[in-house]
Amino acid sequence: MNNFFLSALFILAAYLLGSVPFGLIAGSRIKGLDIREHGSKNIGATNVFRVVGKKWGITVLLLDAVKGYVACVLPAFFGQSLVLPFQLLLGISAILGHSFPVWLKFKGGKGVATSLGVFLAIAWIPTLITFGLWILCFAITHIISISSLVAAVIFPVMIAWRYAGTSDMKFLLPISLILAVFIFYTHRANIQRLRQGTEKKLF
Image (tube, rainbow, N blue to C red; front, side):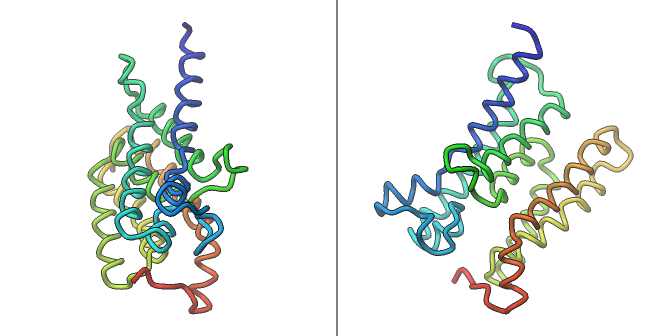
């Protein structure tokens, strides 16, 4: 099997893995409902937390993160080496799969939890620091969207700090900036509600 075909298979597998709608499955299996018709109508962990319950919201968050992580290390399961640029490509595929799943007419989640898993696999130190700040922001505000937007801004700064002067910087910093823009894009409705003062606290 040539390298191009194998790489294409890994990219497709990463997208399909990312597109597994754990939030939709949780709503259907646990409460017999379509999560897309309740709450914020999003399939992500936050809406599952509100509609299905705290335990299941946390479970979906973890599963969405795990699928991002696994997508980035997938070649290792088949004896292939893990090269940073290709790992980033796999991670992007998984995030796009989560946010634009083919099974759900390309209407998925916002990509935060899956991004967490992706970058835990690729750049775990800045990712853990950013996640710690996300937790702190959430503890203060109790608003998921604010915490996610703050984390999106902080993450490129953490990448710049951790990888300054390394060859990995030229790959990681641009992707982290693109990710920040993407997170702001997927949270555009939340941003509008924040401006209006109508964004709900999680609890």
